[in-house]
Image (cartoon, rainbow over the protein chains, first blue to last red):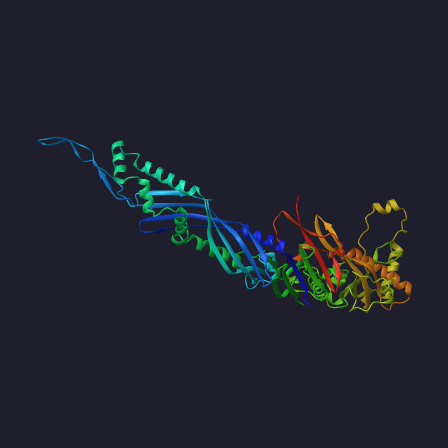
Length: 304
Length: 281
């Protein structure tokens, strides 16, 4: 007969899971050269929602766990074709040009414009998956070989039995892109164009816009936005920037290695330290964890 | 049927495991089980039985026995006393149903569901002064000590000096087998639920005459109730492990229900607790 059994109902296990979920928060940044344009980004995400089911096959199933990207700042670096206007003679004389319009060139840098968009909180993806329970005997790296279990306890680095959720399978989808993102993108393009050409004299600005046609459309063309902004953003975040893979990998590692859903000190302090008396610690042996569709169960023996 | 059909958390400890826990407490907190006067603490070999301890107890300078005052000698106004030691050397629990400890007839009639049988072996000895020292001390007291004051007020105002031990030789130890009936109960200390043990009754095996047995039983019952059990209280959260579910939820022992009539429950050789997570207001 097992010496010690503790069981947590599905409701309780869900609370434990929610605590793990609410601690997930990570950020990343990077940049990519995508040929026609470059992109740099600063992204963070956290988890929300989701539902949990314990299964008789020993797995914990998580559905519709939302990944909310916030912040999500993306800067597009766009290289526009160089355009020069002016330089024409407006008052020719037999001896040459008396008055010449100034020659003005724009878009001679690379990139010519940096187009920042802030879409934090407007993009969500969703993770679903199944996890197996993984039991780990954890020894804190700060524990030195000469330390007894009590030394480790007093130093605040006791050994732990930790239960992690080890992914069996995980799936991630970009599921929600706010409708306002198209407008935010267009406004950002307008803003940056006005800022970029604002220093030019009116005639030159009109001329450049006339040459380029609707510059907003040009930028959208360079960015390859097309008609379906959701598809474009999905491809950008997922394929080009690898954000979805990053989130998926991070979440999988987090549940599998970083944050246990349950832990217990081993040896376990059954009586607390009192005045100068040391705590009474009992060794837990042959631990085992399992789930069924009702509950999570941990069993172990108490060492002699 | 699931463990948690009627509660959020369920925890159980089998009596075999609990006996291992007691054994660990005995070795890691030996001062709960061993008592002696100064000479015993100064010379540990005087104790009746070797005191098992862990290295951590010694390393952390924890006492291996609790220091006691000598037993005052009647008629000396508690000026001198006999040194002694008292040890609980073996302790075994048998959760309901009773199947490992042989109960004496006196306790069988009191045994009911939810009861824990406890078998103890205690040993004790005194350091007995030899006749010459006793006589010398008697002469000295006769020459120097004032008549015993009976005025209560005066007695209260004068602090009593420590009882001086009379040197002598340790007598052979005696050991007694004790069978007791216990039950678990919940107490709340500073808002935290603890499980503690209550001594319902005990019997010393094979001690005569009966009145001597009753008197010694009375002493041992009182010592266990006042001196030992209050120090063995286990926080409920220590039984269920680190179910750490953030601040808004409190861990509480579930009130008995028609399905769970006892909580904590001692049955099927198990100590079982049913715990609910309550949302704090």
